[in-house]
Length: 163
Image (tube, rainbow, N blue to C red):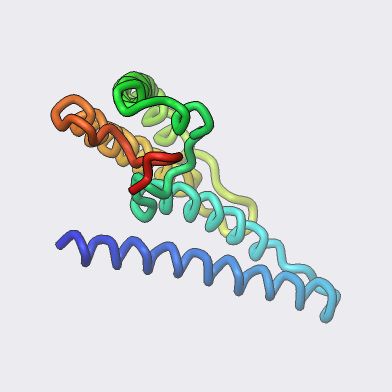
């Protein structure tokens, strides 16, 4: 089941990137070849970019692939790494959960606004952020659980300790 979900997430990301690429090519062709710019292509490109960034961060990237400031993290021992993981996971979970009600209200409020060309409701456009928040909370909850329960597995290894 996990493999099917991962494959689905990858395909959605590829579809969003392909849509962005096609719209980008259409935008160039219509603007510079036909001298008739299309406004909707820019809108689709921007919406797809927002969605692909948050979708990939939520469902495609693994813990090992996340961006980390690992200069300090790689220079300390496993116990300090574990403490770093616990502190950062708790902070991220608490802050995102505290922000969730306000984010929900904002997204719900944005149903009143529409995009300029496609007249797409902005609550749909911004709804990906709510999925991102939930996915980030689950991911960091899992990291926190591992750091608290399993000794030596605080987070992905970086630096000189890589086996």
